[in-house]
Length: 307
Image (cartoon, rainbow, N blue to C red; front, side, top):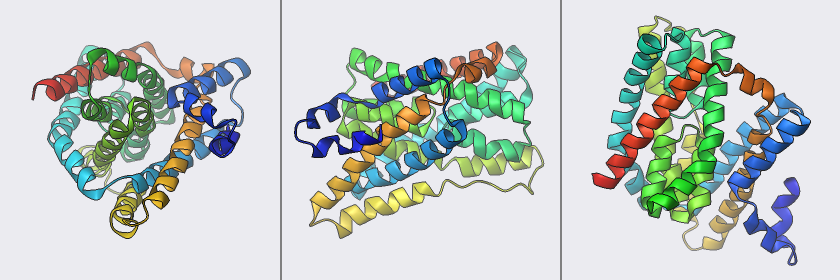
């Protein structure tokens, strides 16, 4: 997959670059993992996280500050409502209806409300969650993320959503930043920029959620993980808007490389989904995750179309 970065610079092979989309890269990774097994799972997990963060920062060099602020502001109102609503509904369905373990229900709800695995990884230690609860929650969100990357662009086209509508919908309804950016890239340039901006604005809610969690569960001594790469993404947008204003080719080149990095990230993420990961997903946590996903997807779509 790393040779994919060079395709644009080989004249006879450049057309292949457009054929390799984020969903296809994820699919190839899934096929690799399910047929040959996970190769270096620890390395895959680490490199996919690093590549995603670097790629997101790189995408900032292809964006304008004013446009990004406008996109983030438009999605802010529903972000606040959806984060709080998802947590409340998730705990109600998980604890009252499905009788899921408290920590698992809270972690799945957190991952759905904000940004998937990143939220779970940040909230888990504050919650004093067991390793088993973390694994089940991460596996549940991971499986749903993989599905989202495939079906959301298809649903967006079927529903006739424009670039702005799809970007907003993807940022709110898809759990993890990687799948949000991947789905946005598959749908179009404007959808990618809007989805990335709104999702990263939403991801900042990790901090207040972790603080509230520490108060509710009386674990104030726990360290809170801050997603610093989001601030670097903002700096990249500022640099592209004001420092590289007269050199658009520089920002375009950096963001172009970032897109390649994102597609390689999708492959590594897909290669992390083995049969062992699937076995960790219990029926009840999966039902909880799917239920929350449907609720937030339908509610956000209704908001986007009719408000």
